[in-house]
Image (cartoon, rainbow, N blue to C red; front, side, top):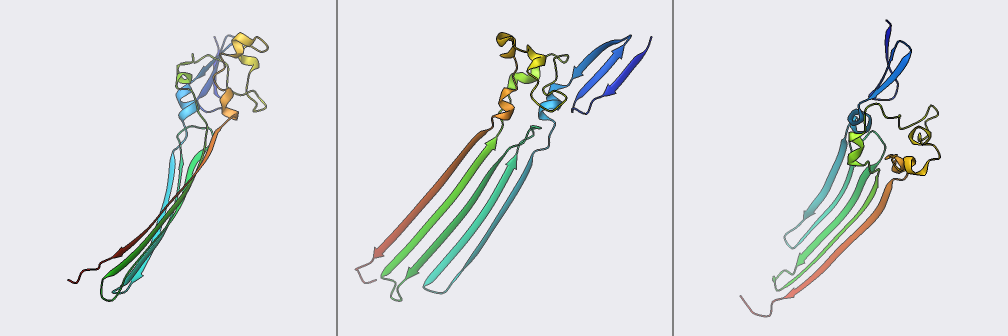
Length: 176
């Protein structure tokens, strides 16, 4: 009796050969969610002024990747400007505020039910690195619909821009 176990280069997949019969065991959680989530967050600001005028300028960058082994990230940049001024007699006040952010989501959605696939199911990708439709039914459409990974090459991508500005003018006519 000969037992040969090899760990394949595909993350989380072990192939065992016992008396010439090959068995594949895939830890789907490790295969799909074995990556490391990362976050980069940078914020900076400059402020100053004098007795009657003050200002603040800020900028930020944020990038977050998920624990999925596939690529994708959420990124956001932001800019803000605040300026306020009061007259020397404090009867007139003006303030301006401006905030802008741009968010780019480029994530890949992996079905939560994918981790419940039997461990001996065919691998996600073939030897050439392409999606392994053949292992999941080939040209049989019903069987191909069971392939839960077709969206790995169709990432969710969205860009959102946000702009918020305000201007405030206050005039005090009464004497204090």
